[in-house]
Amino acid sequence: MSQQLTVTNGAPPSLFDRAMLNLRSAWRDIAGGKHENAPSLDDSAVGKLREQIAECIEARGGEVSARSRAASIGQIYLGLKPEDRVRFLHVLAEDFDVDEEILDKTIAEYRKAVDVTGKLAAEVALRDVLVAPRVKLLTQFNALPQGVKFLVDMRADLLKLDLKNPHLAGLDRDMKDLLAAWFDVGFLDMKVISWESPAALLEKLIAYESVHEIRSWADLRNRLDRDRRCYGFFHPRMPDEPLIFVEVALVKGLSGSVQTLLDEAAPAHDPKQADTAIFYSISNTQDGLRGISFGSFLIKRVVDDLAADLPQVKTFSTLSPIPGFRRWLEAGLADPSALFPADDLAALAAADPRLADPAGLKPLLEGDGWQSEPSLTDALEKPLTRLCARYLTERRSGRALDPVARFHLGNGARVERINWLGDVSKKGLRESLGLMVNYLYRREDIEDNHEAFARDGTVAVSSGVADLLAAWKAAKENAPKVRVRGSRNPLRRIAS
Image 1 (tube, rainbow, N blue to C red):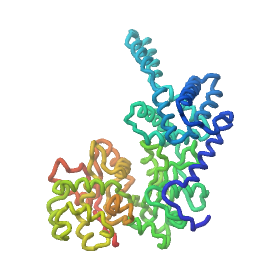
Image 2: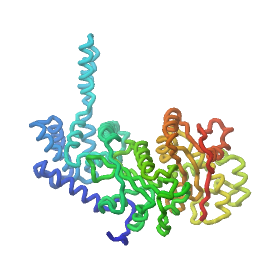
Image 3: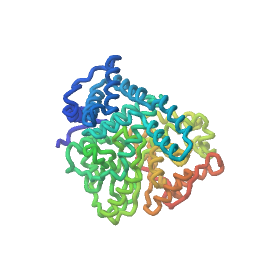
Image 4: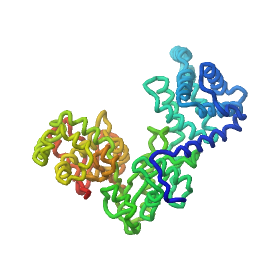
């Protein structure tokens, strides 16, 4: 395997093309060789498609024939251009939804039932009517080779559309319900991925990495060295397609800089000397499984595996991005007095004349190189770190503002430490002004933290992070609901 190959973020076209070719080939024999090249969906083709879907749902000719028709319909979908796939999904959503006329009649029958037997029979009939006919076709896809992956990819296409359309939203609910049942966490297999893993799997690890881009095979090998661990979660019906990758670094103490953590020139350390496991990248690989959570399960599985393999490792923490912080900050700059405590506004004005007017902060941070100006970073460190603590613990409509925070807080972690200039890559500066956060997973606290967050949004924080939040205690309406656990240093500055 060449280590000179440079890859870019996102799946190489060949990866997708090979998968589609294998799927169409697998279904061609089942479908009797039909629809090798699907036509565009003009009005005539749409009419024929409706007939084929109806025949498949009605299982005319028996289940074997229905399976063949399902493979044929799947081949049609795979061969369509993107705009024709949209039309296909509209047909499935609108023409094979719950029949309102039949539903009204069934409801009327239920209301007319007078005894228990009649009501129970009417309830059964009502439940059957409330299942959209398209669900039978979707279930038939599941029985085909690689059919689960096909449905996952079809839902990924659906999620790109306007789900305010009630029919499309209904189709999405049907697909999500089926996939949630099929992807129950108890069905997932966890595998350790190493440099000796099959090349095809390593290629997918490069392609699917969505947190910190893997720039080369040398970069990948560094992430799979002896002081690193990588885990993949797989479904038995998708054995060659990872659902989630979890990348872990074995270190001493909490890590606060992802550039230091991923430095290819740094020597590998003896994992038996490590006392901390840092989860620095968790990548979901399948867009079609959005909204179907495996988080708590996979974190606990990885923690248990590491604890068994390396019993001296007692600290389990993330080094996580904060992707929504900069956007939140810039929106708040419209009213700086509501965003910054008064003492922070005064300190900014005194530290740098460019910060006398907080409105000037946005264009200043949009420029290149601000993170390399010591006087400027000194002035910004305290106020931005305090604001970041507020952002990570605030809620809107009962939910944490930051998506990564929602994931880890919902899985029982606590906000442990905020790292100033922890990610000075272009992406890190663009999304969070270089700030990163450690979420700590204490095995004895995970369940309590999870329950408190799920019950009323209470966020577990270290005493250091609580200190950062103290400026907002007086403003009851803005004060986040937190409980203090632990006493680590609230922030760490990473030397540039």
